[in-house]
Length: 355
Image 1 (cartoon, rainbow, N blue to C red):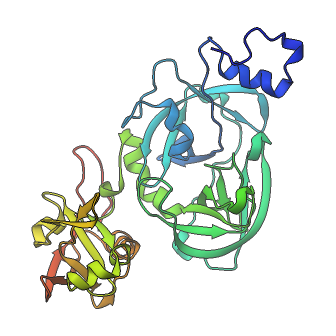
Image 2: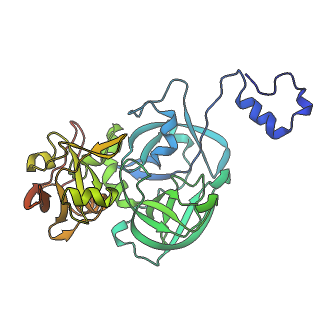
Image 3: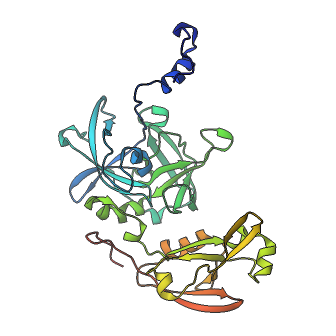
């Protein structure tokens, strides 16, 4: 029911009339927008954007449209023409979506972007961001690479080592390309940090282009893929020890730094190696209980582990399937060394890269 029912329309300010339409009885159309870019894979043109740009149009855990949903794109050469596209595949882990234009004749006569090796990106090099911030088509901003390997855990479904840039990235830039000075793709603009509600604070983040490159074969095969199709995962739920009160750490004889294993996925690399999760609970106060730490991971291959991001970086991004890592863990006050053999749990019918 409208909160302005019975009030003459000319007595309701325009801003409130828009608010009233939100509460109207007619079915509302949910809309979102973002950016994207053209690539070529195995001789066929595709569009790439962020998963979160198209997610609202898709069935949960699927690349299929919800009933009545559709996605259309416009190209700079003809911003008046809406072109329908199909979602080929999505990778929520890396916040990626691959799209195909149904009518190939509607594609612009423009070259596809060249995908560069993001491992060669250096701090301080020039960046160019292209997108549609606030609906302003084909806006171009420039800056530099501010940092590499920044983990932004709120993006996608896995902490990703992002490229940080001070090129202006605003709402609507999501899914657009981050280019180097030669016009090659080095990242997919994905996130910004806007402290105190500001739109631009010089803190933009892009998914590295190499994560797109390694995901393309699986995306093109269709459906939903994730990090485990191309990268090794340990298979644990964990918490940094600094999230536990000091008194609890002392009572359980836990070290000051490390990562507590809370749960171990059956059949995972961690499970096969013998890592153990929580078997008990602890009381933080009279009304709050949480799982007690199981094994505490304090080092991998001799490198100290202080956070969950440290494990993700070491296992998922710095290792490959078939690698054996040496874990140092604390179990019941005793230090143990556990060898963990990493593997990629590839889905049936989904290609995986060569190790």
